[in-house]
Image (tube, rainbow, N blue to C red; front, side, top):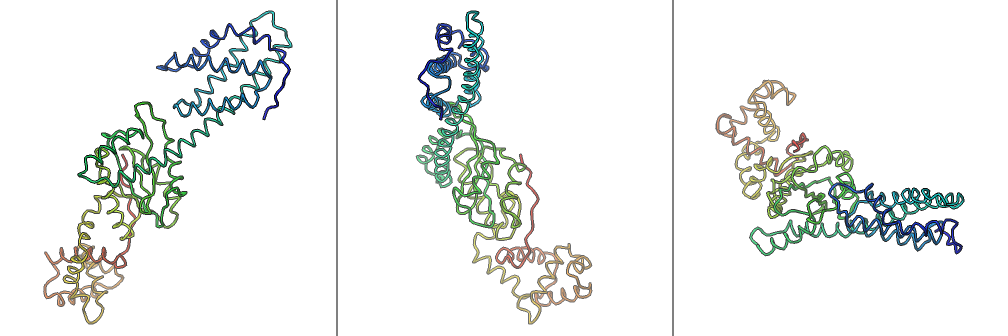
Length: 417
C-alpha cells in the first residue's frame, strides 16, 4: 500500500496549469489508441475521465494513494464487465502518462526540479495504474467466469434433457442460449468422453480441458461469439461446441495426458443442425460410448461407427437367445467348445483361408481343418455361404454381450473438420 502524503508535490502547480489543456490531451490520446470502428465518442469520454483522475491523484500525492488505487481497480473491474479488452484499458492509461509529460515539457517556464519530480511521478503512476487495473480486471473476469460457468453447465443439463416434442421448453432454451452467446440456428457438435474413471463437475479434468481450448471470447452485444461448454454428465466429460471446433489436434493430446496408460474413448454424436437437435446428438453419442466402453475400444470415433452394434444391443434378451441358438451347438460340444468357436472366428476373419487361420491360431493347417470338420458335424451343415454370415453376426453379438470373449482395439483418429 502506498503511503499518503499531505504536502503538495513540487509539480502540483505545473499540473494545475495543465487542467485547461486536458481536453486536447485526451484527444491526442484517443488518436493514438483508437482502433478501427471503435466508438470515438465513448472512447473520448473514458479517456478524458482517466486523464482527469490521474491528474487529480498526482496533484494530491507523488504516488497513488490507496483510494486512488481502489478506484483504478474498480475501473478495471468495470471494463471487464463491459467487455472491453485489458490491453485497450492499459493503453489508455499508459499513453496518458507520456502525453501529459509532453504537454508539461512544452512549457518553457516549467522549473527543472518540478519537471524532474513530475517525470518520476508519471513513471511510478504508470506502473501502479497498470497493476491496479489488471488486478481489478482479473478479479472481475474470475467472477464472471465462475457465474458464467455455472450458468452454462445448468444450461447444458437442460439442453441435453430437452424433449423432442416440447415447443415451450425449446423456446425457453433458445432464450437462454442467446444470453450465453450461442446462436440457436448454428450447427453444433457434441463429444462425449470416457476416461476409465468417474469425471466430476468442477473436477480437475474439466478445468484442464477448458484451459487447453481457446480462451472464452467475451461476446459482443449481439452474443456473436462463444467458447465450447465443457461439463461432466453421468460421470463422463461432455463438450458442446460450434461445428468445427475444437479440433482433434487440440483436444486429443490433453485427453492422452489426463487418461494416462488407461486410454480414453471419445464419441462424437451426429451433426446437430441447431440447438434443438443437440439432445438427440448427445443421446446417440452416449449410447455409442457405452458400447465402445463395453468393447474396450480406445480413441476417437463417430456414433454412427457403432450403429450395427447399437442395433444388436437394443434388445439384449433377444440377442442372447439368438446367440445361444446360433452358437449353442458349438459351445455345447462335449469338449473344446471354446477352442472350436475361436477357430471359426479366425477362419472367418482370414476370409476362409486355412493357412492364415492356422498362423493366427498358432496351430497346424491340419488341426484347423479337423476342427472345422467337427464344427460342421455339430451344426449339421457345411460352414459356407449363408451360415458363414450368420456365424459372423453371432460372433459379433457374443462379443457385445461378453466383451471378454473378444479383445479390444484402439481406433485411429477420426478425421477432424
